Image (cartoon, rainbow, N blue to C red; front, side, top):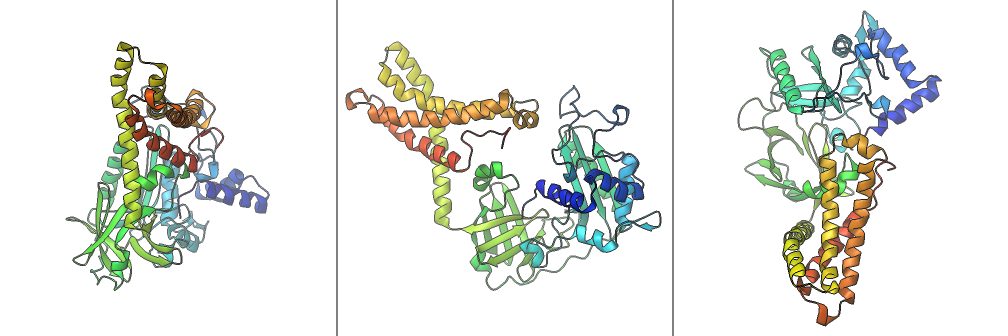
Length: 441
């Protein structure tokens, strides 16, 4: 399972085929109007009714835009309308005395069924466009959303009849988090925290799940070539607890029942429900964790060692290529080095600099989403940079092969970095990064 914005678009297309109506009209007629949402629309609202959007730190307003699949959440609405929607969810589908959606439909939205964890009994996770959020011992249902220059949140606790909606016309995620945190703590003040299940015994086969895991359900396939390496995690069992560690992220869990675990904290309110599951399937051993469940597959220590070793070797080689460049360039200029010497050194530098240029251009872009989503200087530059990287790596190997022994001054360095360039080239090629056309893909 992975969060995917194209799913609701498929469901909307089915609605259009069955109803004979445009999806946006169907929703307006059967949901917006019965609930009393007078301003809600999937399209650009009138200028006088729309707030200007500002990227974090930007002084100029961003132009209006919506996500490409409107059914996945491109709704514009006033705060008053969204408050009515929160009330509609808390009333379990009722509005103004009318049953707009059956209560069972609201229940189905909130609880996942399709994931392995859900089938094992986990009730938190991503349902039908409704997720879970555990904060200060309470389980909130709802969703958050963001666009360039705007952030929003809608969360509620059906058991206590409380909920809220916030929206800010800024891309400042830290401020949005603090606002939501303050509201949640205000709404739950004085409420009894849900009971926390006592720790149980570790399952008898817990030791079989100890070891290393890699991500197996990418939310963004395009970036999976990075996430699968950065997300390598290790699981240990000690003193009746499970410890999960991935980089600087460290979490502790205690068993609740069978192979289900709830997260524990050094102090403060504890999670009242399990959010971590051990899974044995025909495809191997897996874990699913979190309220927007992440799936990880168990891998061998040899696999992890090889992966980390190759990554370390490639990164060190790339760093050495850049650091060594001023040395050989100055030496080549002073001693009027022959063309063969320069050719042996220049191609690795061209390759690495092309990747650095691509990365910096994306990081420094004022609007990377629009820049990559259309044929622009940014997207064309990324396409060209990945091709130059591959061509530079191949050219280096060819030059190295053809350089006669008597002209191979400094050849040891070239030999040392050549495999790193080829490894990176093969890896990027396997994951479709070379010649990447983001405006088309």
